[in-house]
Image (cartoon, rainbow, N blue to C red; front, top):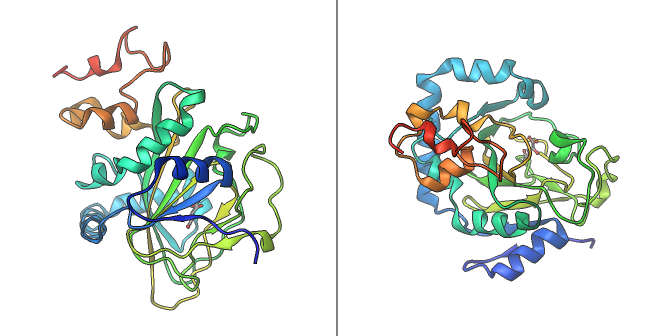
Length: 276
Ligand SMILES: O=C(O)CCC(=O)C(=O)O
């Protein structure tokens, strides 16, 4: 058998966690989210999409809609739309790991994206890719510039398209050719487990070969704060909606600055919030 993705149980050991992410490129955090939170999330997303059908339409026609295809439903910018999204984003072990692992290259970090994906029966297998393609002009290297999370809001199985990962495939430039498929392993997850990987690790959504099982994903990313986010955090959650959010969440959305990057009128972007 070839390399596998390490799987850690609660309480996670921070040193082991960081080493797995940094050196193996990917790790599974078993039971990162309680089942109740997964159910609440899916209920809230369902209610939101029913009340806002235009969001599904918008996502399907968006830049990323073409990449995801017709068999995937997505909802972007969850913070500000979905009540329990802050609890999912601020998963302590994951955020702390991101801060530690990204610290050599950035004093602060940002939330790259926080999205819901539903991969319906018939969803095809994606091509192996690196999420660092978003910043494809940045050379690859030993230090990660971003991390990605795929959290199972429903079971990930071989049949319903569990994420494929190529262990140890990190470190190269974003546009390097993908390894051959035999190097990839499919990472089955129980509901509430989170797959955390370097954004420069090759991975792909699997084919959903079932006829009746949608795979529900909460996906997010963390990145060095001197790169542009995939989701524009301060437009997604503008100042009037950002008031009263957790200060750490505000920082992650972009109400923060990295030295002189991201300033508002030459000062801290939190000054755009009236209550500050
Ligand atoms: O579906 C998955 O598990 C992975 C999704 C992914 O990598 C993507 O949409 O870019």
